[in-house]
Length: 75
Image (cartoon, rainbow, N blue to C red; front, side):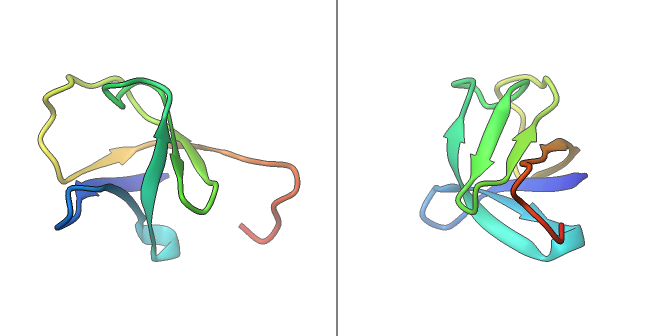
């Protein structure tokens, strides 16, 4: 799934899912450098990001794998 990652005007990392027209702050990262690990959006969606250099320029659109949760429906 395509995921655009950027910093907003306050410096907060956000994730935007174009397919769902959804933008949420990134509230948790498994890796301090973000890349190559899981990130969690404020709505609870989790994405497995590809491995990239820590100094990758933002904004960037990546192909990320969304992890599904059994309780979710309609996504």
